[in-house]
Image 1 (spheres, rainbow, N blue to C red):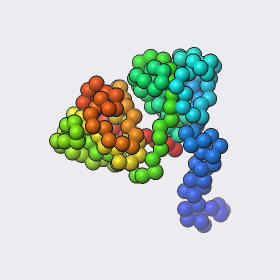
Image 2: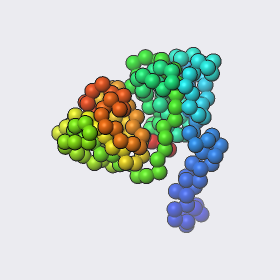
Image 3: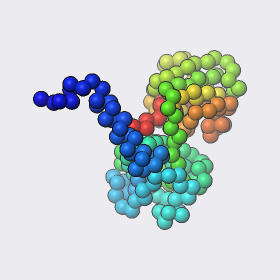
Image 4: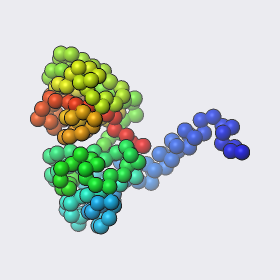
Length: 207
């Protein structure tokens, strides 16, 4: 007989305790490992905090697989957190055995930083026009196809009220994507995009 079944909520409490211990051990950011080759092979680099230049860590800027132990992370094409972004979070157990898994076209990563965690429930407001004008939608869950759900694929400004979100240019979480932490984005250029096209959007998974 499993004695834990007699204590309601124990599993959830144990899971929360594990997350607290992980943060205490690795720091608030979490931990991610970058591998030079596919399938978690070759030289690797462990990170527990932001890194503005991977070359400073004596690590090649070629990254073909990634393992997230905790938290969520953004990889950037250029130094100092600039250029095309890619997200590594705890979706699919945090395992990315090739760069196709994070919708990248090349294996080049120059800087990495942790996604800021927010304790508020995930919520975002999407606006058809810049400056938070036009048609407005409020979302709290993942949207694999914005056009199918809201008959709209144009989003020019966003308010992130809770959690962190990923905006994809194509449906079903494909294509160029941008990570949005809690703040107001007055224009699509504020989140790094050159277009107001949004095909899908989902919450960042931290655990």
